[in-house]
Image (cartoon, rainbow, N blue to C red; front, side):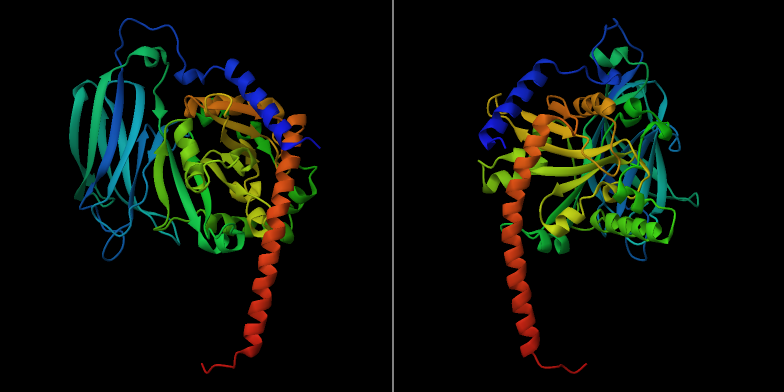
Length: 437
């Protein structure tokens, strides 16, 4: 087995090679010949908040906003979603969206909804903002909310800055977005207790609303990566029998638990590789600035609704909840899935690097689709160095072997802690007397 230092050298070599041969960004946002003038518009839109929004419950609402630049039913329509603000009729979302190459007189449809933890979200109303020449410059808008029953109740506050399309956006054949990528970080304390290392009793699951998914992977589901029919575990999960249906229901329940929205859910956006690294490793680096981030592994699945992932490791409960089918919410097809690492390479100016692979037994994504993954992340996170590796790559195998060795050491410490906890609990139960109900 290679030493850790040898693996580090190999990774640095990969970073160097990929920085010098970075692929072109997705066609919808790449540089091209720049026309002298454009009839279209670029907009920076901030969904500031709401004023006296309709009630979703008896007394209040948990409002959020969805925006669509076109038909909401069309999967190719550009869309945006804010975070949820709890128990308020005057939410402050402060969420920014960058649009490019918007045709004059294009309607931006805004839907205000009430988040419901147990059932389908409740529509509260709709507002419309017409984009184009009339919104040139910076403006503030107070848009009436039209409730589903037709009555007007409350307002949505929106700031816009409109300029004539210029630079790369003038060459686009259709409207597109320049981000930033919205995310939600969901906290589970119950899972955190079982996976705690260094007394951090939190477990995070993330959702990234990546753009350009349909541009790169298409809309034909039959061309996505289906479940691996040669993999025994996948055969059990997707079996057309009672056991299979029970497993899928369990995965669905687990997905719902980890990705549920609540007061601890964090909503924000990341615009580049540095911000992505800060999101995933900010707390870790505050505690240990010298920690080797290359050994921190995340398991992910990419489906049309976005990228779902969590940190994976040796702890039994953490590993159980990091399965690709769970992150994909039992989907029979995914755009892609595997594992990834985000780190800074000290030999290349500390730039952030994403090393991402197709190491998923459940879906076994095609290695031929790895260039699509590279293009996707370069388009969503400018400045991020993206390395894609097939699960059979020798370097990746060495990295996984070293990671497993480190995880085994952590697992041994956790097992000892769990055993001690179990022993103490048993003794406590034996010594306690029955209580009256």
